[in-house]
Length: 396
Length: 143
Ligand SMILES: [Zn+2]
Image (cartoon, rainbow over all chains, first blue to last red; front, side, top):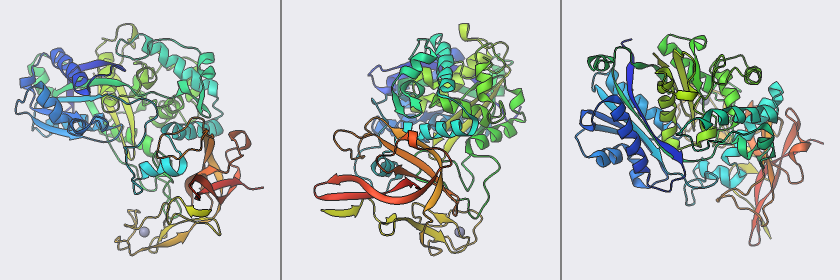
C-alpha cells in the first residue's frame, strides 16, 4: 500500500480529426480531470507532460506548454518523450514524485494533433537515423512491421485473417458505446476482410489510424486522497517501463535486425512479457488476479499477442478465448472495453494516459453501457517501440 | 549506367553478403554495423569500439516472417512510377541466430513464400536515379 498512488481524476478530449491545436485538447482533458478530482489547478504541485514531436517546439516541451496554458502557477514540471510510451513515462514520473514524497498532487497531460496517412519519419536527409533508413532502404512502414508479426502468429498458431477481423468486430462493438472514441460504428468480419489489404495479411481495418485527442490524470498520494474523503481510491499498484534484455530477438520497428543470439541465450521473457511481469512483481499480484485489460492493439493481431504476453492465456490460446466471447465485455476477461486503438486511432502521447482513464472509470463502475461487471484489478500495456513500453496495474 | 550501393558499408556486392561488425571479445555479431561499443552487457571487452572488427555474415537462412506493401510508402522511400508493390522478409540466419529484414527479389509474391522456407542473400536494384542503379541487399528463395 505504501508503494501506491491514487488516481483521483480522469479527463479526456474526444478522439477524432478535429484540425485544432493540440494544446486545446490537453487543456480540455486537464480541466475535466481536475474537476473530477475536486481540485483546482493551483493545487497541482507537479505537472508531467507527454511530448508530441509532430506539433513543433511546444510539443517537445509539453509539460511547460500545458502549464503555461493553464496559467503559470509555479508548479514543478517535466516533459517526456518515449515514442508511443510517452504518456506512460509521464505517469511514471508523476508517480515517482509522489512516492518520493516530493509532491502530493500531480497532473499528467498528453495530447496530439496527428498528420494524415502513413506515419512518416521526421523530414530531412538523415542517413545515420535508423528510422529514416528503414523507409529508404526497405520501404518498411509501420503496417509492414505489424504484418510481419501477424504472419508469424499465423505460422505459429494457425491464426487466420478471420480471427484478426473478429478482434476488430469486438473492439468496434465496445467503441460504439464510448463517447470518447473516434470510430463509433459496429462492423462485421466480412467488412474487415473486404477492406483493402495494406500489408498482407493485414487489411486496412486491422490497422489502427492516427487521431487527434487528449487525456489527463490527477494523481495524489493515498494519504492526500484519504484526507479529501476518498477512503478507497483507485490506486496504481505497479508500473513498469523496463527496457528489453539483450539479446532482443523479436523484431520491432524501426529495427533492421534483431540482436544476434549467437553468444548469449535469449532472455526467459521477451520484451512485451517482461514489461507486464515487472509490473506484476512490483504489485505482488499475477495474471490470474486481472479482471480487465487495455492492450495496445496497433493491429488486431497484436491484441492476441498481448493477451499471451501478459499471461491472460497460454501462447496460441488467444483465438479460442476471443471466439468464445471471453474477451468481450461480460466475458471472463474483457480486453479493450474502451474499444482500443481500433476505435480510437492512436493519439500518441495521449494514448497510454487514455488507457488509465478507461480502467480507472471501469474500476469505479462509471463506464455506463461498457461497464465490466465487478472488476477489481486492471492492467494496461503499451508498446512504445524503439525499446520503450509500459505496463500499469490498477487496483480498487 | 552505374551501380552503387544505396547505403555505404552495409553489404558487399560481389559476392553478395551482409557486412557488419563482430566483437572480438565475446563473439557477438552486429548488423547493421556497430562501431561504437559491443552491446552485450555481459561482455568483458573494452567497449570502446576497439573490440569490433568488420564481419561478413553467412548468406543463408530461413524465413521467420514476411509481408508485402500494397501502398506507396512516404519519402525517403524512392518509388518507381507507377508504384510497384514489394515484399519484405524477416530471415533468421542459422549461423548467427539473427533475424534480418530485406526486400524479396522482384517477381516473388507473398503467395510464393512460407515461414521456414530457405532463402539466400543477393543484391538487387532498390531504385534508379539518373543513370545510376542504387543497390540494396535482397532475399531470394533457394531453388
Ligand atoms: Zn562483446
